[in-house]
Length: 263
Image (cartoon, rainbow, N blue to C red; front, side, top):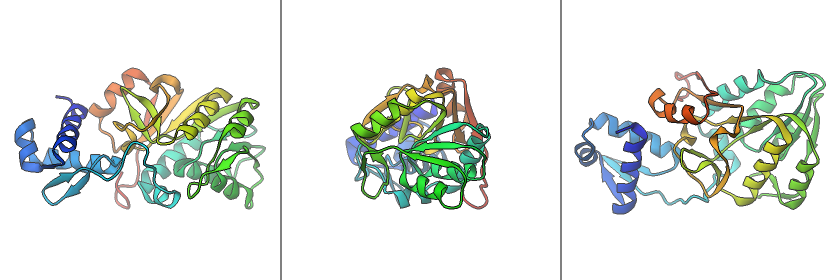
């Protein structure tokens, strides 16, 4: 059984029974207790379950759940910083860049603030403020309705703005990446914005830390192979990443500072 199949079996058991214990799942799946604990830790990081002493229970969340901006900034900070640094190397001075909303793209914006003759189009008000404060980057914010506590712009006006634009590269985030569902988002209108960003960029790059893999959210954005490159961190094992690389061979893993904040 592949690791992702094993984790799916654990999730199915938790969802059907309401809980699972390490010893029981170890015997059921014929793997060590340490392996089950690692699986539970990763599934909790993804938001799929909540760990308890000796096991796990179902989370009080659904596929439409999305953490507020501050929570996103705190989660997997070292991994997101490493991903953002790698993404910055793909941008050349003078280009037009689209930045999706999110904490990892905010980290990328901080790297791009030092670039010359750069134009950044974004749906994220936090990114716009970060670039407008002491940066020579030209910032274009698409118009529309602002999502409360998330600071992203959505709606028909935002989609229309993006349809009128052409960019050298678009950097997108995701709430989930699944072999069956593809790249997904917790909000339908946000997913539509991401689709327009994909269309507007000559190149498309997905920025996603390891906790997004194996997770499915409400709205499909696109298939895994829609991106010219996917950047993640070393928190995902080779065997877990292998089936995704069959769908898109252009997946890059970057190391992060595990001593300070584990990937």
